[in-house]
Amino acid sequence: MSGCQFAIHRRSRAQDAIFRHYNYGDLLSLVTVETRLLARSEPLIIDDYFDMIREDGSTQRFNEILNDPDRDMLGEVQTQFIIDTLSKSKAQGQPWRMLANQVVMGRVMSPDLTPHVQEDALASIEKAWGGVREFVEISQYSLPTYPDSWDGYPAARDRFYDRLSKAGIEDILVVTGDAHEFWVNDLTHQSGKQMGVEIGTSSVSSNTLRDYMGPAAEDYALLMTQSNPDVRYYNPMLSGYIDLELTRQKGTARLIQVSTTQSRDYTAIEAARFALRHTTSGSLNVKSPKGLNLKQRALFHGLG
Image 1: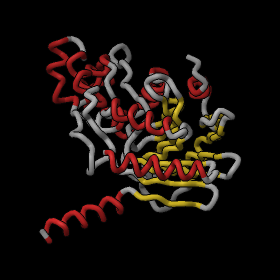
Image 2: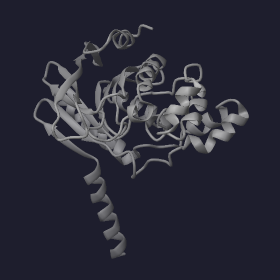
Image 3: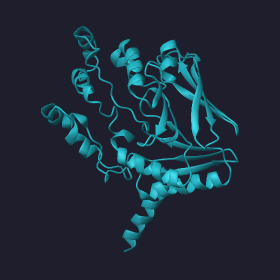
Image 4: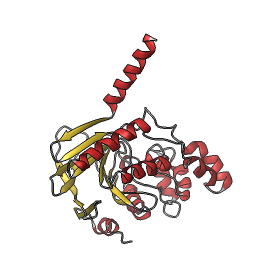
């Protein structure tokens, strides 16, 4: 029995060490979440279902698996910890409730690339990315771009949003890594209700999609933004980090590009900037983009 009790005690300490809360005075509550080890159901690897999808000519059977309500991401213990922490933050009058999140939370489906990619482009990209042909073929089915992220657990994501909404929290600010690309996403429930904003950072030194697709990644980024209403800005061309400034009245997210990943001698340049503002209804919006080109700006505003 003593060995069993010791194991439970150590497991509890491990959970506390993985998802934690940081309080910044009257400004901010920050919760670090764990979405890899503790409770996440086994990720779906789309390659494992490719033959089934190709045979069916549809994603019906795959979507039944994907949308299984038993698939979980956070687990009950962690979910309740987040709800309790953010509820306390709201009750104390802190304007910002932030999640430090491991994988992309916004809804991001792969755009259909089949009408856009020519054979010469495929042959060129294939030299660096052997699976590009299957990637292009399966893109026509509008499947999750990152099935190991929150898009691989849509029922769990909506349950989490439901719990937040029931607690009166519909203004979460989520900062995300992992994807090695810059993202600015609206966070919405399947019903369309706005739940917050996600700012995703690129990598400082690891490869981005540009390293595999070359200049074609720029067109892919525009198509990705155009095809996904929740994606306000997406840039896989740059390496860098996020400079996030919060005051009680407003927030500013600066996307900082590093000029090179090959040398310690580099410069840091502001590539884009976005304003974060609370609304009178209690939600959080992203607005006033700076540094975007004409096409990016149009897509940010939902045009095109």
